[in-house]
Image (cartoon, rainbow, N blue to C red; front, side):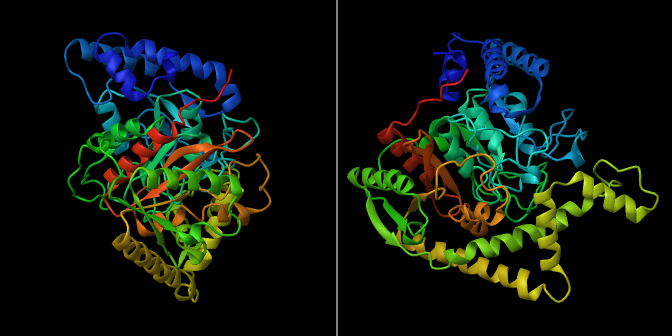
Length: 485
């Protein structure tokens, strides 16, 4: 086995007994990036020398007996997490040269525990998208099949892990942006409960929906990363002061007695038969393992896309107002008036999808339309939350597809944004409700493309999600990596 193929847990175990150094592991990942990233296109910024320096420091600390949770583990960061001294572009021209003066809290935690940050990975511009095709610095491809999307907006995060370019990565999930690319690239991806992980230093898309989470090679690694990044942060007013359990402690036992809810609204017209086959197989395995399967209704699911695409763009319109060439963002210097400078800066700096969402959001918040659109969408959001609360009185977790289809071809829906928006129908409701969700590999399509299974649960019950995902992972045995290079 190549070193870059190790899981986080395997690498930690080998380094603990002196069988492996962080420098060797990091060099293996860097060599892998050299070998395959020309094809995969996951990285925007690679900090080769910085990573090797961090690895040597981790090895030195280990020799002195000072070992952090992630000591020596090479990870990648979605390029909207602020990294001190390393550019953070958000996949946008307007931030092409932005170098933050501080680390995001999650980056600070990874560094503090000895993690090795390899660099920043590709994403949809300002996290607005489901394919990562709107990135201004190159589009990541699905490592399983050339010419297919890696998903989005954390497409680079998923592709880098899937291709063996890092052992784990961090992404962000506003409407499925961790779970969907994890599903399409055959990795594990978790969206924690809103407030479980600090958003300080995460460049905002939609502040009431964004949440940072891990993308990993297996469920054990996901639990390890959740241990590393969770916890209250006084610098984030939305961070919840609640005890953080040891998430690895949930990776035991079985599912006997657990109630598995199957939401009927997620198994309707438009669901690819191959996706339904994989997910139904997972549900059947859980039933055979002793879980009780319960039919569940989420009656307001049909309204979640409409509600999301009013709330998220409205918050984006507000958050992105600061990129005006004065306070933040690259300035267009050709204009001869202040108003022209604003217009030219934002017109040149933002891509088509970001402009589309700013326009939608500004309209929804405008005088005379606020009550009809944003306020109404917020009321629907409450109904969606109540649907989940009712469902979790009848079951412990929900099991469903992540996306209606496997990955599609790059450019296939470039002229049809509505089709892309609708592909998020099974993930965005978790963000509207603030509940946790995880995607775990479930199988493959006939074309060899990964298909994930989604597990969702009540607020701050990530432990049960990890338990079910871990058992399902063991029963399914979907662990292989794509052939590249």
